[in-house]
Length: 130
Image (cartoon, rainbow, N blue to C red; front, side):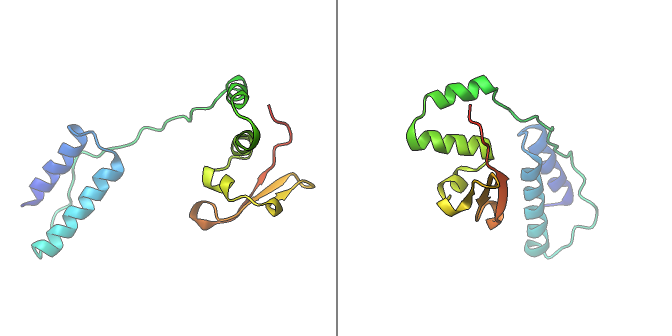
């Protein structure tokens, strides 16, 4: 296995397999690790291959009418959860972990505990539901 083989393989991943940039980076790091620890050699020249890149994409946002149609199919706790997830920007797990003491009606705030990366945050409690 040579550095030329590594370059060709990484280019193959992008050109023919059309993998994401993160997949290509993971493969590169794994190959360098194998090169160092399997062959006990440091790659001498920079491994330059065709690089994958991710096109920025705009998020898909539902219209107010579409949200109302979704809410019309929900009732009870499911409706409340859907409205909280939509109106407060919660993740499903965050909504499932909510407690009564996390809701502050005086300030129209909602405290989300143990969210992404186990961090707490505050969000606006939407006052008007569609």
